[in-house]
Figure (cartoon, rainbow, N blue to C red):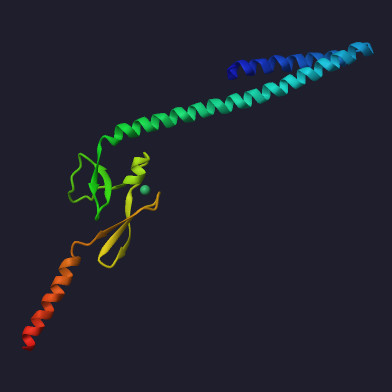
Length: 171
Ligand SMILES: [Zn+2]
């Protein structure tokens, strides 16, 4: 039964309870009073059961709304996902970036691939710097990507060059 039907049924029972209570307050014989009291108990019991049914139906209706909302979000995400592509980030790691955007002056938002595959967009952020690289992390799944600094190799090379220059000078 729908919530509306259950609510009107509980209204009818409420009216019946009032009516029976009204009769019970009147001067009536004991036998009638006993029988009416039993009817009243049954009505009150039914009222309780209807209230439980209303609560259960309301919970189900909320659940249906939640599920439909969730389904809509999933469908929206799947449509949106078509606008993204996997791009390499660090050795052996990938992130999702928007297809139509190209790397310019503005850095592209990069999304955690693991979360993206679970249909959640979680932006990767620079979490810390380590010697020779930067670590990007996902705040949702705690995944981390180490991206070596491009200048790291040059620094070692230039140090080597400096040393050989010094050797030349000493010779
Ligand atoms: Zn993640």
